[in-house]
Length: 411
Image 1 (tube, helix red, strand yellow):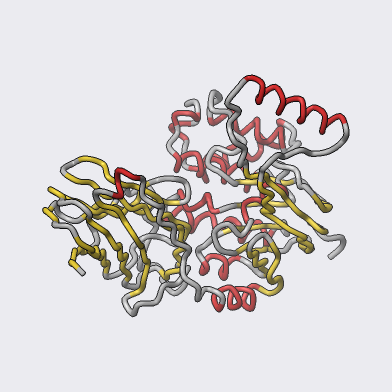
Image 2 (image 1 turned 60 degrees about the vertical axis):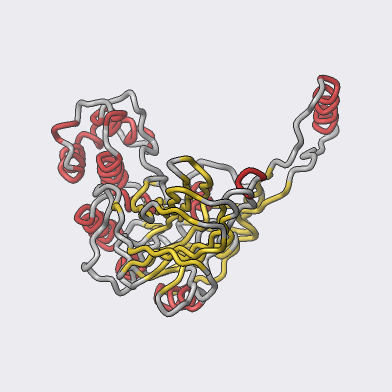
């Protein structure tokens, strides 16, 4: 099979989480600048009170030429960071990477496109970036346009494209302009179910018929199982497992017993005297709190609320937001007057009807149409494993309103 397409040794990526306090005087600001300058002249990094965070740590692996590799892991595992480094979008802090072949990547909606250029111009621009001649691009042009289904909009500037049009054209360019290595992140979730199926078929053709290397990140485990021969499992920035797709997926699923991390902020003084959330739980109907919830199963969201002063027309609401920040579902309690005390709001749904992927849970409270509290309570994953075709992709459908049954009880 020859040399590996990608070789990674001791790879690490560090970020600094700023915790610096604001300079209150000109003297403080001037002193801080002098210290930073002195550290640079002395060859030292001076990060003050910043906290060190390693998104990736000591990763080593090889990907064979022509292999199709799924990269899986929970939110924050480092999957997207790894792909950005392999795509040369960001530089690693430590380690060595050897890439043998031309790389095309599709990581975010609009990646590699110039918004002021037309779709036609961007096809030629992307081909030139990949090192292709104009004749080569022209030979593939009609095939790209037909696959993307954007003929009518080809001479429109892409800044006016919808996210779905962006992804269709971007994937068509990346898959058809003959890169030796194709890197695809969760961005395909923006497309509809039919287009996702079409993309998976094309990636299979690219890998099996044309012998190119494919790296694919997705929370849709059936897609990973269908497409990939090998898999890498990342956890907290480290490589937890690598090997055949089946065994790695099984190890990933065995580790999904811990509950999704939930954050409930401490209420400010004004809110603490009125009403605020004390706890949030995501559960299946049997009371389990998994970090990954299968598509199609019943689930519920439980919110504990403390009321300190009488509330008029009080409303508790929950919202679900996709990984790219799009609201896809929201539900709320009918307005009601509440006396002081502890309450529990429960939102129940007979089946998760979203597609597999990463999501955020938002919680909000209002009183008499006035804002009380709103925050992101949890990030969680939905897996499409065993869902089949019963639950199509929801991308592009819009926000689903009040699809959950709700109740509020005093404890």
